[in-house]
Amino acid sequence: MRAEWREILARVDHTLLTQSSAWEEIRSACDDGIRYGCASVCIPAVWVKQASDYVAGRIPVCTVVGFPNGYSTTAAKCFEAADAVKNGASEIDMVIDVGWVKDRRYDDVLAELQAVKAACDGRVLKVIIETCLLTEEEKIELCRVVSDSGADYIKTSTGFAGGGATREDVALLRAHTAPHVKVKAAGGIADLQDAADFIALGADRLGTSRIVRAVKALEGEGGI
Image 1 (cartoon, helix red, strand yellow):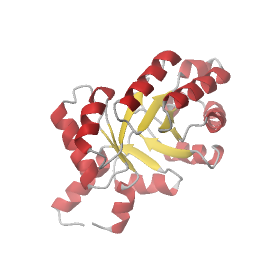
Image 2 (tube, rainbow, N blue to C red):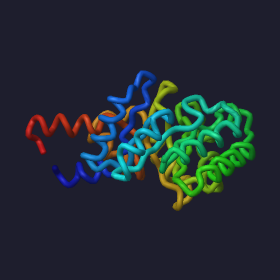
Image 3 (cartoon, rainbow, N blue to C red):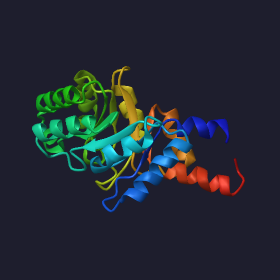
Image 4 (cartoon, rainbow, N blue to C red):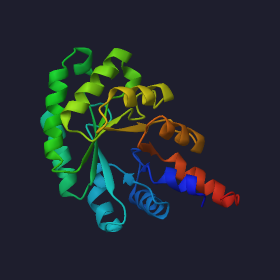
C-alpha cells in the first residue's frame, strides 16, 4: 500500500451509522478498520459492547451521542456517553443543540459540553456542530465554545442534515479553534483526493466509509 494512502487511513474513523446496520455489517466494518489501520470504527451505540468484545483492543471503538439531531436533553446525552464508555467506547461523537445556537444560548452549549466531557471519563470527545445549518458567525462562536469546553475535537457534520464537510468549513474551524482542539471533517468525503485536501486544510480526523472502499477498489485494480 502506498505510504500516502496509509497516512490517510490512519486518520479515518471508519463509519457505519445506517439505521439498518446488522451485526454482520458491523463486524465487517470492524474487520476493515483493523485491516486498513484506521483511527477507529464509528458505530451505533447498540453495537458498542459486542464490537468492543470482538475487536479486543485491536482498534478503538467510537460511537455517537444525541445523534443525529442533537436536541435530546443534557442529562440524556450524559447518560448515553457514560453508557457507551461502560460498554467499551474509547471515543464519543456528540451533536450539539443547534436550536440553542440559534437562540445564542452559548453558555448552555458550553455547560452541556463540559457535562458530557465529564461523563466520558477521560475518553475522547468530538463535538459535532452541524456546519450546514449554521452561519459563519455561529461557526466562529462555536469554535470558541468548543475550545473552552475541554472537548478534544470539533467536527463538521453528522452527514444526516443535508450537507457535510466543505473545504471552506474545515479551514474556518482550524483557523478559529484553539490549537489544542483538533478538527474532524465528516459527511460527503467522496474519495482519496477529498481526504488529502481536508487533511491539508487542517483536519486531523475524517469520518467516512468511502475511503476504505476506495482503497479496496484500488487494490482490486492493482493500483497500490
